[in-house]
Length: 463
Image (cartoon, rainbow, N blue to C red; front, side, top):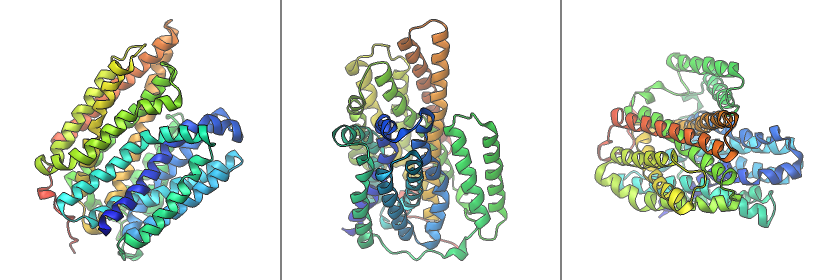
């Protein structure tokens, strides 16, 4: 029973992290008015969280293997909870941005090791499949629920409550985790305390994510990030105690699942942002109406991931389930490429929301495949790597597809089209690109991935 309670604790922490990434978007106008953000500075409400979150995941995952994944999880939740309280009390832009940065640090510390803890608790293949499905549901549905919750809290209370709500949840998570999460000693810092490697990968990822979220406006930062990450790879190949042993990439499933995830989530996450923008900017929905309109997607993902995904994986294998889910998501994007300017929700948008339930197949299958080739001693690292490609994929998708949509819209406006028609044309191009990314993810899954034998437990460490 403790295992399932532990899963609840891990899922609650994952839900908090995902909610915090989306809940703030609805409250941004109220925050701008009360705190005094400029229009340009307001974007750092999101960026200040995203940059440390994505940049620190790999380092936090490896440190979890070295000092203990339970220790890293508890420390991360403590940092996140304290930063949430600071964010709610902030009375100026500088304090709020600093608090958001600390939230990103805490989220990275906790999120990086969650899958590593989960797969070591659930060693039976069938139980592990169900556990991963439940955990994946909380993450997939959390983004949609965050928009609804953000609207409700901001309208009924005030914007600080989108941060204050994390405090009791965070404290409860820490107290329960102390009771139910298994203690693990870790290998010790001497087994992989690669300080130079840590500096290279963390700075490279942070600068790279900064380049992405800024839309590539500062091209030289991308070059710096590429140099730093290349240096990290060279360092890992030559270091006596590397931060990320490159042997982990020899597994076709680890490499393939991370690549497929980056492609798939680039399209999936961008869909959520762009459809929300279309509903508000073209169809005239309010923020709360937009969140409610997207609830069928969250409910569909929940039903599929909780009730269907694990059973299908047990019968047909995680690889087949992944491919089927990607086909459903591809179909949803194809429908959106034909969305009319005056779209009707029931006939034009609801079918898309139902097809998005394919995400309930894709996310658990990717997690299963991405962790299947890792050794027990590398579980935290594999978890951190998996979460890193997830965040990088989402950031790239939003930046690239939003830029494409904006560029296409500007061109159509210059050609004399009405604003609603121009916006719709821009979103259609973005949805077509998203369909291409999902198709590429399907090809990676088809060619690279292999079905794990009997959903075996993590491979034991070899000397």
